Image (cartoon, rainbow, N blue to C red; front, side, top):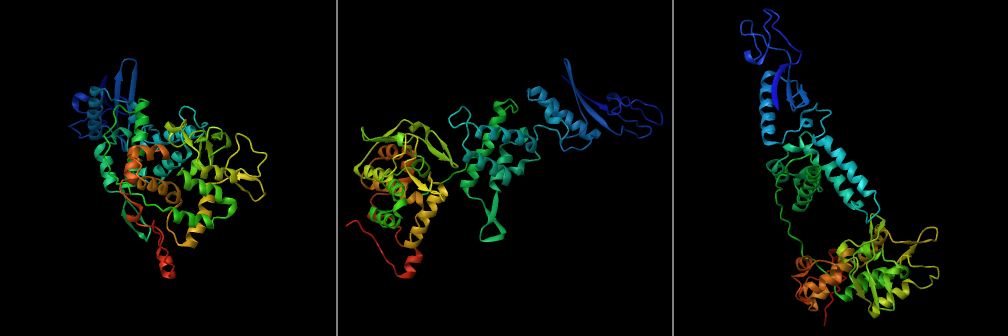
Length: 420
C-alpha cells in the first residue's frame, strides 16, 4: 500500500506562476512562498483507496500535520495494524472511544435482555455496574482512539483517580483500590470485546491493583437469636433460614418448593434473584447441582414457611410475604433489608444482613474446627475465598463481638455475650 500527500483541491497550482504543487517540490513554490491551502492523505492499495482530510484531533490537515500522519500510517501498514476507520472524520470515527462504547453498551444491554442461562446472558446487576462505570468514570477516555489506550495511559488514569469526598462535597479524595480494580476490569472487558471482534489488534497489559480483602466479622448464636426474637412472626422463617444455612440473600429469597426433597432430607440452590429478576441458577454456577442436607432446625423453618399454603406448587417460592393487596409474593432485597435494619437498629447492632447470616455462619463453622474446604462447600464458595474471609477466626471468644454499638453504649445497654 502507498501513502501519499496531495492537495485537497485536486491539481492545485501556485496562482502567481502556475507551479503544480506535488511531492517533488515539497508542495511549495519557493519563488512566491506559496503552499496549497489544504492537503489530504491518500492510502492506495489493490482495489481500494482511502482519503483523509483531518488529523486525529479533527483539525484540517496542514503540510506539517500531514507529514506526521503519513509517517504514523506507514508504520501501522508495516506492522499490519492499519485500519482506515481510525482516521475517518472525528464525528463518524467508529474507533473513537466515545463512539465505540455506544456499540459496546448496546451489545451489553442486549445480552442483559436474554433469558438467564442463554449463551451470552449478562446479569442485570453486571450491566448496571458497566453502565455506571462508563457514565461516571470512563469518560476520561472519550476523545481517544481505542488503539491508543495503552498501559501507561490506563495506569496514569488509575493512579490519579479521585472521587468526591462524602464528608465535603467541594473536595475530592483518592479513590479506593476496590473501585480502581473494578474500573480496570471494565476497561479490560470493553477492550477485550473489541479484540475479539477484530477491531483491536492487540490488548494492552492492565495495571495490577492490590485489594486487601477485609476479614469478616460475625455474631455468635446468642446474638442472632436475640435479633430473631424481635423479627415479626410472619417474616421469621427467611431470617431463620439465613442464620441456619448461611445462604446468600438473593439465593434464599429465590428458593422454590421444587428445590426441597423432604424424602431425601436435602435441598439445593436452584436459582437466585438478579435485580429482582429470577434466574434459574445460583451466583456461582459451578454449584448449580450441589445438594445440602436438611437439619432438624431447617425442617422446622420450612414447616413454618409452608404452613397454611395449600395452593403452593413446585414453582412456588418458599419464603413469601403479603403485598399491599394481600397477595403472597417473594421478598425483594429492599423489603428484606428494611425489616432487618429496623430490628438491628432498635437493638443497637451494627452488623449488616450479610454479617447476620452468611458471614456469621462461616465464622462459627471455622470456630467449630471446620477446614476451609468444608466451609467453602457449605457456603458455596471457593476455599480461597473462605480462607481470605475467615482465616483470622480462631475462636469466637477471642473475636470482636458486634453486640455493642456506640448508640447502645450511650444508652447504658451493655449486653456482652460469652460462650461460657
